Image (cartoon, rainbow, N blue to C red):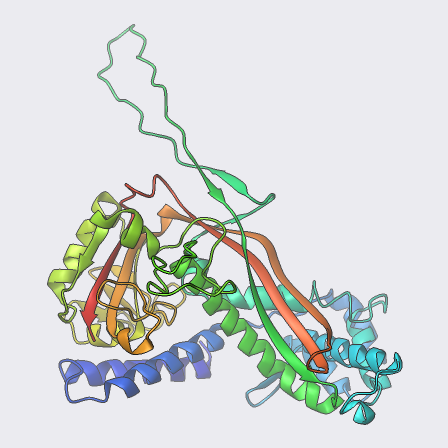
Length: 462
């Protein structure tokens, strides 16, 4: 465990202890507690991201190339070969950062050379020979010059960071999608057991089969750059940009899994129940709906309202009860509350926070507590809602907390396309645009209208 992660866990423990010693959040600054916990969870995920040694090329070839490089980035390259990154305090420069910086600078210069006269382009300098040679060294044989290595170098690195920081999507069963849509064969139906008789053949069972379909929905973010670029400045911000995209991408994967809903009308979408969602709303799935939708809409027998009360053991036990037999496998069950609800849960006697079972315990990514043996994974992607568990267009109406409870074997996540990074010119803003995208799908096992592997508690006072 790194010192940074140890420090973050200690701060979470102190926050938890403060709430427990106060026996709840009464007389405490609840908004500050929620904000502090959200920030600590982000810091915890960032600290847990592993350094990948030697990415994205083979070490022996790099050793030879780097030893011959004598430019301004010599120290950085040696550290990258040795430790996977050049570190200075919290600053961590990786090979993919050099590649992306070169890609952006080369794109800007190509636009300038095409004759475009734009604000800031007069200050743009060509990519330095030092950076060109550094990128060439990191590609070992010099065959790649940055543009073509980025999708396989930086993209694969960021994609791994997404899964490292994800609390929900990375915890579910993952299926690559060879086609879109892709039919998943589901678990076979129940077989029939009978008493056997010697020398008598057993009665055969026609086993029912079922399938579910994964249909991918694209998720996109955009970063704009001025044409007035300086090489040192670009390199300085690349690690921070990479880290921000990694954490943001993980949150986006989780948000889609929780909130996906195909309803595009003026009422009915669980994320915007009283208005028509924008056509670009991330949650507008072209495939199956997500985790919250199943108990809120598809099978409301797995739904419980706290009727405006605070969270309590009574409601928590009822929520687990909705899962039926699926709630017995504690190792596969998950409880995902919003941050505000989690803060109120800290005062419950049956919540065992990690300060009780120890930060060195084998825990899943994002888990900060257990309730009766079931991992609790607070998520910023789980929204505050109105009393019916759905979100209103009026932000001030979304004041109620809640949580989903599910058996993770009841869900499947698919990826038709991993991370793609593209850089091009944005004429309207006279700048460069970097577009990061991936295609994700989620599907529930079984018939959604009768599925019992997922439940929800809502209308919780926080």
